[in-house]
Image (cartoon, rainbow, N blue to C red; front, side):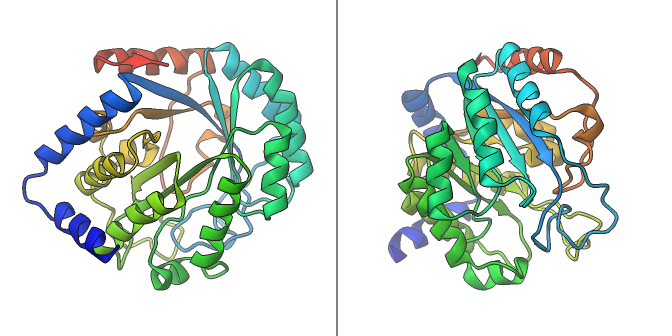
Length: 319
């Protein structure tokens, strides 16, 4: 394992990474084809009980206008996404205790008959609760580990531990849910060795999908003055993730697009095969601020049409 970590660290530090990008793109084509899978992303609550030091949703941010969608509107929006052509809906929120496992499970039960796959991304739960989500029909669960360095993790997450986070990922896998992980590039104190460890943890968990994006400082958090992560290093990590997890779903993250729109397009030539498109109601879209961003007003069918046009312009096939 140490040898693997050293090799990954050396690869990340290469002056010329073009060969690795090409290998990752070739492997992507062989394993998952030329389609780009489009996921509808519905952010339904920006309340969060956690105080993560990098996140604009953290419970200690008094400046954020908070919102919650009612379960009926969440189901209605998910069905509208299915009608617009989406095959997967990602239901994402802060860790909001208002939405009990029973409420989340009931929403999944109401959405599933439409034929759309359901991904949940709502934080840490117990082993039994992840099993319950699967029983209700959930297909996938996304829970990023953010960093594999226990000390760095503890400094960023005052009310959690890396051990607890990884255990939850194991519970998700055990429950039969497709397991999503991921991490940020450019966190203060992160090194190339840390990133190598992050990549190996994805493989150890056996992640079916992995979101890798740059750290973007939020002005209303303790890390407001930190530098943002590197788009180029993010792309290198995505390429190496493809080599380690040949069949995984690897998205071009929204954060990468905020940092550098050109690089968000480029990441599809070095291993990525998924893109997220927000279907969050417009009145809430700009309030879900893990990092600072703004999004134009567009309805669900028009948003789908635009992302399909972008994918076709890349010479790829939207799915």
